[in-house]
Structures are given as C-alpha cells and as structure tokens.
Length: 328
Image (cartoon, rainbow, N blue to C red; front, side):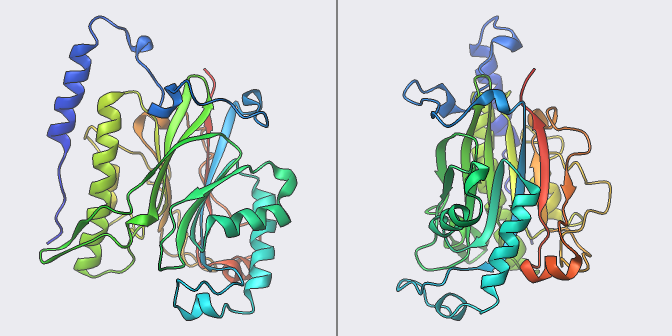
C-alpha cells in the first residue's frame, strides 16, 4: 500500500498563525521573496542585469548516463569507469541543442557532476552567459542533478542526508541527493524556489512508495516555505518517473491542499519518453499556484530541436521548457 503523508492540516494551521500575526497588513505588504532574497549580505553580481529578464525560461532535461572521460576513484560502475565512445558526439549534440533552446536556467538529471557541466559550458556555451552551476552530487554514484543558470542564485537546499520512507520495513536516503532546491533571485520583488529532481525509477510498490517518500519530503519543505510566506513562488522540475495517471502524480500536484501545483500540459498528451517515439510523460515543469500566475500562455513545451533519431541518440528523454513573466 502506498503511504502518503498528509501535511495539509499542519500547513493550514501554520498559515493561519502567520496570517494572524500579520495584523492589518495587506496582501501587497506581505514579503514575496524566498528567504535568502532578503539577506543584506547578498549582492547582485556585476555580470547580471535584471532589466534583461522581464521573462525567464526554465528547462529540464534528463541526459541519460551523461558522464565525463575521467574515471573517478570513488565511483565503481562500468558506465563511469569506461564511458561509451559515443558520448563524445552525444555531448556535442546536447550542447548544440542547448544553444538552440537558449534557456535561462537548465535543470539536468543523470549528469556526472557540476564540474563536468561547467567544463562543457566553457567549451561549447561560453558566450551564452551561464555563470552558475550547482548541485549536491552523490559520493558513490555518477547520476546527479545539476542546475546551470544565467540568473543569480541564493541558498541551496540539499535533502541528501534525510531518511525517507521506502517500505514498511526500511527507509532510504541514498537517492535523496537527487532532490535539490535553490532560491532564484531574478530581481527585487521577484524570486522563487526552484527544485530539480530525479525521483526513483521503477514500477514496483516499493518504488512507488520510495517516490512518495521523496515527494512527502519536498512537500514538507514547501509547506514550511508557504507558512512563512503564503505568496511564495515554487517551481518543481525534473524527471519524476511518474505518469499522469499514477497516484504519485496527483500527490505531487496536491490539488485542493495548501501545497498545490499545476501541470500546464496536464490535459493534453505531452509525452517525453522514449525520445524517438514518446508514449509516456516522465518529465515535468510544475509551478505552484502562485508561480502559475506568471506562466506565459503556451510557453510550456516538449522540445525537439533535432529529428527523433538524433534526439534519442542524445538521450532517451526529451527536454521540457516553460517561460515566466517576472515584471508586474
């Protein structure tokens, strides 16, 4: 039986408490920033001009066993120890696709490290303005979530050391490094919490419970963020390994709860896997209800910058993008 942790009551109580403490402050008086956006110690970097970003685009892409040429002494797996020879061409094509797509923020899954993505961006994307690369890599595994950004970033949140539900007899934490959140600091008055995930794959009950445990962890974090600031914008992205007819999908959206997300393509076929003949959706860009108000209509898309055979050669997943307005 899938165990879904319901935090709605707690979230509502916290939100009621925060609202009660705010006195007569109007909605426009409430802080609309993620926590680190209000730190006076954080300064806008000299390379960034917020006037250029009245809209921003966020892309998610699982690049499928995307490793570098170096054998890490800390990771033992054939794909990392002896990478496939076709990876050289896959890297070139992936970078060419990213040049075509031209997203402001890219959330990668199944890449070896942020150092690797930094190196590739330096070789192939140097003039495109990507300045920041971050994630929380596994100490023993080669598939990680990495975020690449032109937009200043604030606090990074890692869930790697937290144990979550696996089944009635066990817990797990060794894939929770594949959940990463970061504050995105677009401009004064426009900030959001971005989460990149690569949830557990598989169709067994244990796999489903594993994913629900990971989603419960994220939803607890989001409930805390929204309790502190009911206007907070949150964007959940990545390979959820969930199809939209699964219970986990509806749990992720949380329709009717205090932590509610929207799937802008939820009412149409928006398949992302396999790349050469997509028949199911595994990859998502999900804004919460606050951030969904900023979604540019029609901007959430499944992208195919190349023909199906080439896209499948790069990765078995297709990239997904959405664009958001950042100005009043």
